[in-house]
Length: 480
Image (tube, rainbow, N blue to C red; front, side, top):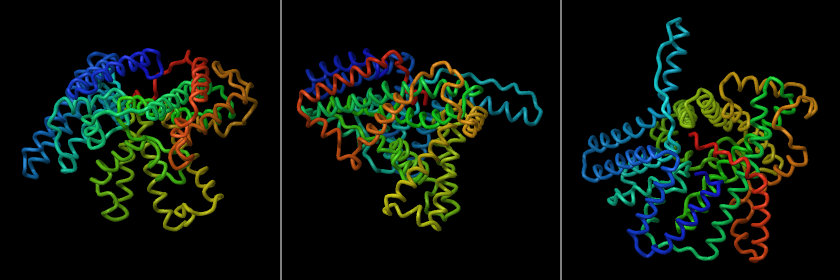
């Protein structure tokens, strides 16, 4: 059940109608939200419900055990066991086939028969997200940063709440669990703000991401042998915008949907392409995953507390594993390693180049840093998008080809003219900067507009989405 389909719209309206009828009864509304969440998640594959229930049970039980175990060794053992079971399940579904392929490659390098074959089960949608969310709870209880949840109903809903179960944002226990028992309050302003989030998300996904993906990015990557240099450069710039609009669009719809039930989710993006450094980019892009990697991997590895060489190594390891989290492919490993290496290099150079650390300097310097950062990020996204290292190499090679006219080589699927590309870029930039601190809380200003103007804007947006609705592509981050 995709967010960008009429089925989800009907599901959301029905769920809201029932929820607000029973909202005064705590157990009834929590039970209903849990049932609706499992129905939503199980619509992809009913077997998936058993998997999320298993991860939920393991981490809920670990939290209860941690409340009863007082020794450090015992608490560490409980936490390690919960992590092993949760990550083991994730590994079976996500990395088992990749492991077999990698072993075979190594065997071939040593001229040994490559005969290792591991099963490749279908990857359950959202498994990486709810596994990390549940694990964050267990680790936080172990660290005594949150109290153990004693209600299986509350924790099951925390693990499966339908707006965020498929692709985040990854919520911490202290961010979501307390809200579940608070009386939901949604006034007219909140409702309009929620609709603004949903509308912005749908616009990003259907009008920008899907169009750029289907008419520029996919055709170019699928025809690298005949694409001109101009095609390569169009795809080079289009894919970061597609990915941002696709994933942040999902998160906007998730935030807006949850808001209609009186629940606030955290922002997962904050105008990442305005970042002036790689470090700042990761503070603005997929914020909840970046913080998860920082708090549960980088800091436990030693962070920046054990000397400069160890700090640089910790950055490299953290980002490489973060790349692997995105998918069982060497392209994701290379992408993560690339960002880890750049973060390490940036940290070294910042000591000698004031230009890299003086973020409050003049406008020209700010613009230059932003341009450099964006292009470094876009270069990494070539590996993120490519099906393999060899395809990434071919694409990068195409960036130095003669540009040639846009229509010199016919590529099936590309029919956007320069004027339409310009409109899409304008929309992408406008939606990109709709964040606090950049344009003065535009969504709140939207909610304060006169009702006739809001209705007109909704009508224009719906018309634009209806013209692009024939695509209805899945969200990119569902595969992770």
